[in-house]
Length: 341
Image (cartoon, rainbow, N blue to C red; front, side, top):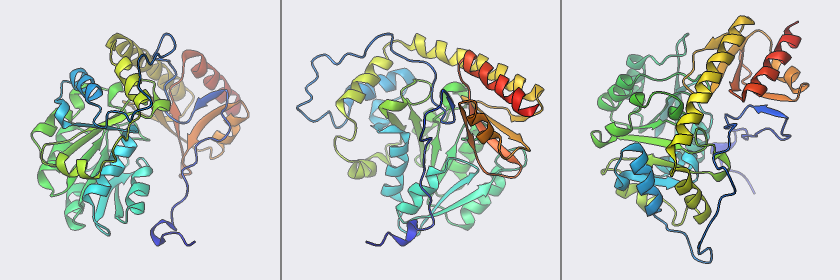
C-alpha cells in the first residue's frame, strides 16, 4: 500500500530507544508529583469517561483563573495542536511557525495536507515580529503556531509581540505554552484569549506537573472557535485514569510551586557551569538549556557516560539539555569536563 505523497519527505520522530541512567534529552521532569501511589476510588472503568471532562476542566480553570467553558482537554497539548489543524486548515493552506521550533508542528501540518512554512529566528534566537507579520500576510497563513518559551531555545516571545501578530494578521494564532509554567505567568497570553477571537493557547501537564506519562494537556480558546473544535474533537478522547490523575495533581498547588522554584535554581547553576566551560548558552525560561559548541559528536561522547542530551545536527553544533536533579547535573558537568580535556 502506497503512503500519502505528503508524508514522503517526513522522517519519524524517534525518542531515545535505550533509556540511559541520566536522561536529559526529552525535557521530562525529574520529580514525582505524588507522595504515594495514585488511587482511583470508585472509578467506573466499565463505562466511557466523561467526554467533556467537566470536573477536570473546572479544576484547571480554577488553577489558572480561566473560564472552564473555554477549556478543551486531551492527550497532551500535541493532540490539541493537531486538532486545531484538523478543524481550521484546509488542504494546501499554510501553517506558519518559526525555526528552530518543535518539529511536530510540521508533521501535524503535512499529515493533515497543509503547507508548512517557517520564518528563521535572528542571530540571537529572537523572532523579528515585523518581518514575521509581513511574511504571514504574504503567504496568507491560515494558522500561526508560536512556541513561548520556545522549544528548543527556551526563549520567550514577548507578550506584546504575540498580541501584535494576533491583531495584525487574519490567521488563527496558536501559542504553545508547554514551558510557561517555568517562566513568569505575566508573560502568558492565556487571559488575552477572552479579548481575541483568533487567539488560542495550549498548555501541558507533562513538564512542570511531572506527568509526561499520563499524556494530559489542554487548550484555552475563544467562544468564536470552540463550536468548530467540538465538531472535530473525538468523543472520550481523555481516559478516566488521566482525568483522575489530573484532578489529584491540582489539589495541592504548593508542590507545583516548590518544584518550579527548585528547577529554576538548578537551571541557573547549570547555566553558569556550562558557561564557565566555554559553551554558548541561550538564556532560558524553560526546564532546559540550548547549548552551542564546536563538537558535533558531543552527544555521542556523553552516551559513553550513560548520559543522553538532544542533538540537532546544526552547524555549529547545538544541543538541548534538560535540567536534571542536582546529582544528575553534577554527573553531567563531570562528564563534560572529562570530554573537553
